[in-house]
Image 1: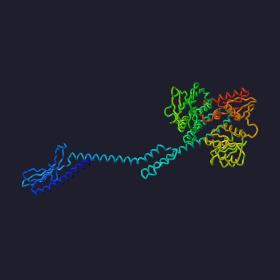
Image 2 (image 1 turned 135 degrees about the vertical axis):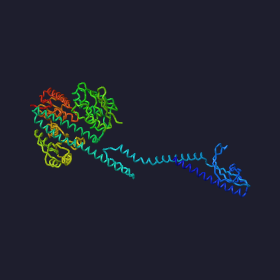
Image 3 (image 1 turned 30 degrees about the vertical axis):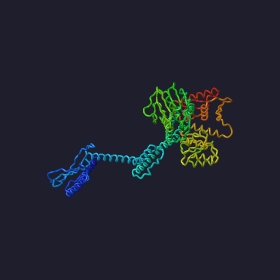
Image 4 (image 1 turned 180 degrees about the vertical axis):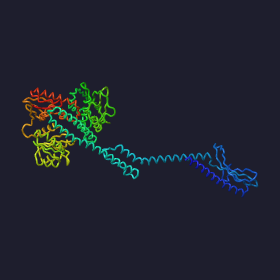
Length: 405
Length: 226
């Protein structure tokens, strides 16, 4: 653009000079014609130029060529320098040689620079405006598919089939993106479905051999009722089968929760359910000498699947009872309008990382633990718009349930 | 007493048959829906043990068939699918009870017994063991004219012990019967059964009932008069 402006300046200057010279030549012709015909001075008014812009200077000879000059004259009235182009040529009037100078206002260097810079600025502003308008109107439309796609990526649910398409677009790139995305989603869906089916089938298929094993050992136990040693060995087998079976059921439950197989929700008062669960657990709790403190300041009502709520409270209780303190243990349940706190003494330290991860146990001494209890609690909370957090404060373990806003 | 086991796993059928034959219960079996419908349309059974996932269809079809044709028999659903919908659908259709695999035989037997007792036409529906008389509907235990005050859990425990008399019941099996199996209780916690057993035994002894509850090898209990 700057280069263009320089070129423009040069072209302008050249053409201005040319046109000024042309006009001056015309004036010269007129004056030469007049003087040769009348042999007298031609007045500025007759030539059609302002007074003072036609000057006759006596010279010694007329033997010089016509030449052009540029000059700057101070204008007293306007207090500005004016640029003039002057043509000088010889004439003979009454046998006396004169040099005639005709002045013509022209655009000077400063004017030309100013006008070039001005036009340069005009171009520049016009270009800016143009770019702005283009980006405003065109690119806004251009980003629409991108935004749609971004929205799709943000909101897509792996459990549901995606129906996203740029079908109304005839842009090749978008069509290709469409195809690639559809192919990718299909593959993800298939993999996800297969994994889901695998875990469902696996846990389901395990139930049958477990049932058979349990049944056979049951039969053997009845047969060896009077043989303490054999009976004990069989009982140990039975206990381990129970563990596998319980573990399997928990995994099945997790899979089901994640597959949204508990979709019926109802508004439930958590306090009522917790009280019911305490009644059910009271025997175990008493045997372990655990003191129950139940404080309800307000009702905590939330929409949740009743079965899941029961399972969740069971798991929380089971956890609180399992990791409680022998003899001086307690379980404090505090219900307020926005959260429920389950608090029990806890002497260990929480395992590093996410305690809600599957198979995370706080210590190895509890071999009967499947490490799935808190995962189940978390999975249920996730599905029920609840938030579960845990913390340890002054040798107390706290599990807090609150609403997800 | 005749039972039909509808189940696609032969090993499970054999185990249940062996177990029930010790209790003088005759069993027949069907390994698919086709066989099952054929058998129930021809023969009369006191109770049907029904697996829901059969190779050629859902076991729920059997219940529908029985109800449509007004065939009166007890139905115990036995399923590996521990899904709530199945349970509700099954019970809604008219099944008497629902048990998930894997199960304890003592539990299966107690469920069958209670189905059979509920369906008993005429006569006493009470469960009687020597001087003890359990009224299942009223959940009441009497010895002679004297009522023994028992808690809900103690009653369930006594019922479970008497139905499975002469059999060693492991603590796990008792816990599962009384509290269900979703509790995830560790082995140490099983000792709380001891408290219940002690209370029950004391109440029975106070009512001059003989001491039938025997502790077996520290791992279980047996109700016996021998």
